[in-house]
Length: 346
Image 1 (spheres, rainbow, N blue to C red):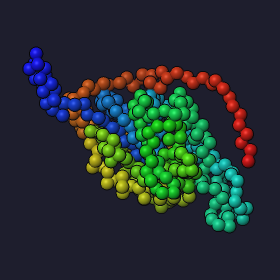
Image 2: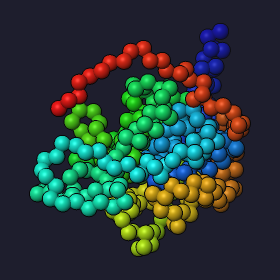
Image 3: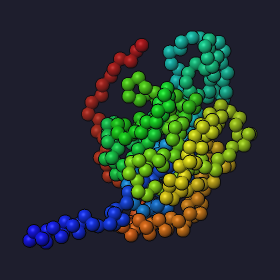
Image 4: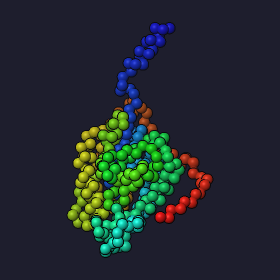
């Protein structure tokens, strides 16, 4: 009996590591409107039956990835983002705050942006655009999840990246409020104001420090990394750099894309949608952007099939019904139990 038990334990210990289930992590880059191309990648992975064990996202990748991790299907994400007035999110003036000095004079452009010259600096606020509409949208999209949640408890574990506005430290959001985490990750400098994080800290767009966190995925234990970089082939024309918002986005790109490109070899499969003619803030072409994502997937069709076969040799593949109701729809609807009114007067 003891000898039989010994040989059974010995056999278990000698199982090749290759037979263990590989951890598959999906990494989605930032890129503003270009990030809609990630939807085509999600659709392709599901069509191949490739299981995703974790999603990492930066900026727009955090929004698309956060929706997928929360239980939305690719088709539901496509419909949500195509039907949402994404352009309107970028037409909200920044909310006035208590000013430290009077504005000497200001210039109004299309009644959207104001830029004042104060005694000490340019501008009387840290951003061009207000974030109330975006916060309302995020609150609606993730309403079924509580403010405090471990992101490992989502249908698919999730991480997103932002950066400390003062020190440049990379911050990896792994728990707390999904709304706050994703809002932090999409805080494009100058375009949106830095977002409060923890006590006495402000964060900006994760693209500033890690726009394609493939190395982070490896450090978290990924055996296989599938990545989508919607900025890799970005070359804006000089004509497109005609406003401050576009220049802010381009500046972030110039600062971050070299680091992102250095991580490309760390991915087992990398999708590179050709979006050179799409501005990062142009949300008027969702169907075209998603189609470009589909074309990028088609360009890697053989590699995708080979990777699916590799994964399928050690764990089951499950092709999901694209018309199914996502896991998010099965979450209970929150109930308002109490309304508290707090004096916010200054």
